Image 1 (cartoon, rainbow, N blue to C red):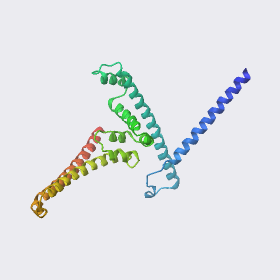
Image 2 (image 1 turned 120 degrees about the horizontal axis):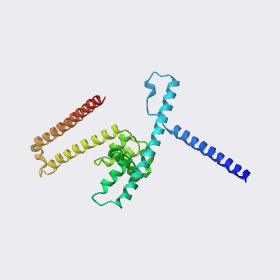
Image 3 (image 1 turned 120 degrees about the vertical axis):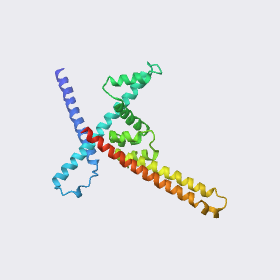
Image 4 (image 1 turned 135 degrees about the vertical axis):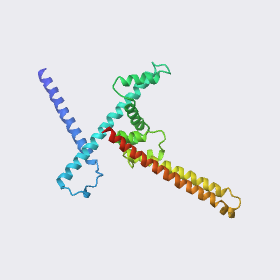
Length: 240
């Protein structure tokens, strides 16, 4: 009996070692597959320090993916918890019960919003789960807003946009281009609605006014964006 237990213990040890080795190999393969996006050639840096920085960069990205997986699981658990609590809550108290439940765990509204947002994004786009898990909380926050265009989401999923700043800029640019496209359609409508093509010159003044309006709106948007950025900088200084 003692001999049998020793054999079982040995098998357990062997299995644990094999598992650890397999995980180690998977981890190394994962790290090797991570590509650096930083231009190290722009720095006067030794090869030794460069290699160290690349290793640190890869490890941060790898750990970020692990955090993304954890965030995804928390989001999944929150979604499941909400569905269970629905069964025991009155329609008017459904949201309030869920809020009390997650607050008892020390979570706040913003955290739950991000956890559930990442989970639902993965749920709706399973083929791009790995890319979604690698996104930062700031990036997730920008991509799950209600008014985000589908074309921007697609760029995020394929890895073309990876940071919150890039996603926000793409969203803002899309809004401006959509607005300009609408104005363009109005101009074309003015032209096409004229029964006599040779009378277009009569509408030239109206068209020029439209063009000026577009330019003014574009400048206003850029000015507003600049003011908001300056305001954010001032707020950051106050926090410090």
